[in-house]
Length: 110
View (spheres, helix red, strand yellow):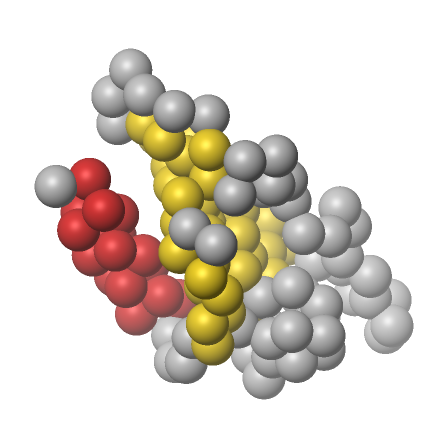
């Protein structure tokens, strides 16, 4: 995934005059070579392809390369990237999303 941008959309658009609310934006350094970035928004209506009121991007960066990313890119819905592979992800709750991401991070860093 060298050269892959960590961002999907740079803005969240509302069609009913409600604003998106930032719930989390953080970067946690795990080692000299690795960190995770989280960006989670509550949006007034689901991102096309998703059925929940969140826009998110959770990424694990190792050695300057994004090796794991969960996101719900507009039109693609909920999915994750593991290296070059992209696969659907079944979103149920924010807690379950964060748990799945954390478990994948732990597996990948072993």
